[in-house]
Image 1 (cartoon, rainbow, N blue to C red):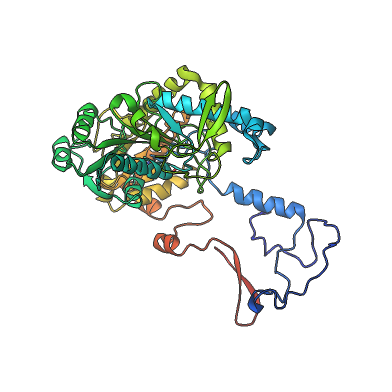
Image 2 (image 1 turned 135 degrees about the horizontal axis):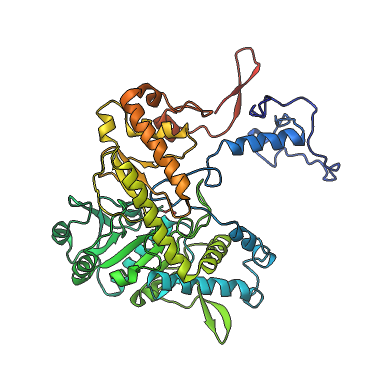
Length: 496
Ligand SMILES: *Cc1c(COP(=O)(O)O)cnc(C)c1O
């Protein structure tokens, strides 16, 4: 079988062409004195010369090397890699949504504004908040915007609170966003059950506490049962409660952050609400707030009066605009489509299935791996590879071995408070057969660690690229193909 994997420069043949363009009718301009000398090209760019068919095969082959939710199981904990229904794509491509311009007069985009306004209301209901902004374009940006509102709120009350409390199991973006927003973060250790240690919390809450950032269920997949008491402690000292709702598929239609006592929440539409994610964007991290924080929401607010939608910039206490136009509009259309196709009953089923799937898989795997918090979990759970580590095989090795079976590995070494952590989120969209098959693979790997550890230590065996130098790959990523001249001056391609 012919492989179509060759690098595009290797299949290039002088004079081969894949496009036909008309003769240029732009007059040649002398660039001397118009651009610095070193920026003026003296030779033609060295581009690959290939036919259209070769080009299509090249990119199709490349895309097949990528693992995505559309071609395999993807139990990446805290990332909610669930199926993105294709109807979302159809709706986002409707001309009335995809071909309008954000600078059009509002009278001409009433339909788009109506969708945004209804999405704000749906998300407010889902989170138990009083108002929502759709502007932030990522979970982390939502966190930052929320914390800027926390800051503005305290300032308006004449207080300068400098401290944000974050539990040790928190997502890394929480302390990062708090720092970027100008706060000092204080880590609250978890107790033996993986939950917030209430006594420790009480020690740290004082009149300098601006907010506590929490996610419930937490990143171990466990529900913070003492949340009402936690909220009382923080509110009692004048602080606010921030809810990280990136992975809300455990609570949809069951409870809300509002009921738990939270004042601010962000959601990740690109996790819980099935808009595609990975590879850096685009995403959407709407933020919901309780009434007392509405004056601080970003502007413009999308509002409705006499059946007309309009943009309201008149909010003197607002933290300002945090994103161009209305946010990532196409992503908002997809999330709206998902919410409307599911309806309230469907969204409740989402949570029930997400929790059932996680517990079913947890029970199947617990005999083979250490389970530091063996109790009913929500949408995800953590295991520890410490039993395997004693035999010389680390969690990283098992993650690499999973690639040989066409599975994306779970999140590993996070949360930080679990040794050799494996964080598994099967999501509600997988079938029982897929979850069973994944369990079989994990059990096989656990047995290999005992009987034939080398096959795990040398994995992956089936992928184009084996193990990378992870440190170099992170610090000095080589993300493009480049041609380097050898000593003889011959062009040689460098794989990257
Ligand atoms: C993904 C995630 C975030 C960050 O979201 P981004 O869109 O990647 O910025 C924050 N908190 C939790 C719990 C998450 O899972």
